[in-house]
Image 1 (spheres, one colour):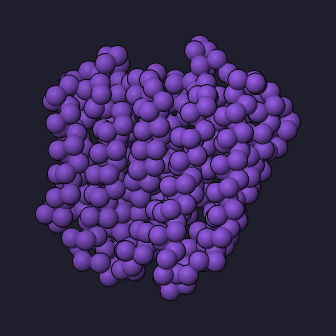
Image 2 (tube, rainbow, N blue to C red):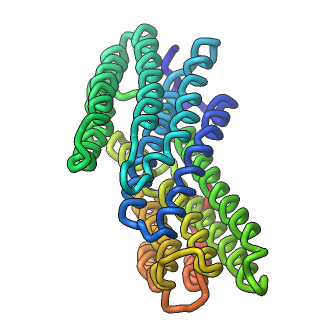
Image 3 (cartoon, rainbow, N blue to C red):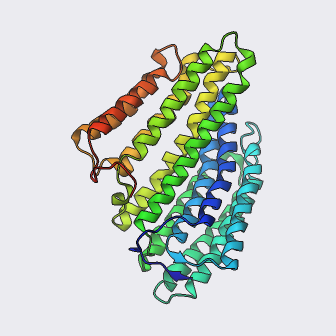
Length: 380
């Protein structure tokens, strides 16, 4: 398991990495679906908190493997088996998402056990890497030790009282994201900027695709519950336009220029939690719009509208902060964050997601007119 060359040309995602990503779609889809049900039932506060907690487990497990795989080169049977074990953990984690959203007695048992299994697999990967390269031995062992220590604490999390569960979760989350910061101080791992940004872009595509699939499924399922198909067709149209605009905005800047240092790489990686979570939550908001149309939600129309526009606002602000602002000119750096604020005015129109879609299209028009740093608007 030798370190890879961070300047290696034509570096692309491997079939195993792509297979790994697809398994995570299951967990993302279930988390988004549970958020939809919680919002429509009027349990917004508990539903959003549960969603953010579950999504952290999904995102962190994915991100740790992704950064490890960009730094080390091996494709033997053992590496594949350990990776498939992690994928199995994702499937089990997905099965445990539903109980976490129980408003009265949320149960984290399955999620925590599955998460710990995935993280233990990463410990094996780091220990194996530590035996292969002397220069990175201290870094690899620091990762292994840090991950192991935090997993022991996650097991303890299952026994904390409900009253302090959220506080303990935040502490353990901070402990998790601190491990790479400490480990990388010994010797930075040789991450590949083009490869890592490609991996993030591919996962963004998967999440946006899942949002479209979930929205389309909900729209098709509501056909028999409306007197006319006009409103459903309109929701379908503005959903597609909004998702396409989100794709366009995400892929406008040259992402590899956003991770030129250790500090910017951490910022890029960590801020994508909000990018991914918001993109996945968008479909939940669209499904709430359909519930409002068919009378299956207790939410007022204005609040129902915000369930779609708030995720888009978060998405816009996150991708602007992490990838756009450093390479964009003053016009783009004004339009994108301003648009993120303006989409929150979506409830002023009685038609769901319409104002949001118009604002997103306006942002795309500005981006088309203002070329990014490399003049192509592509992740390189």
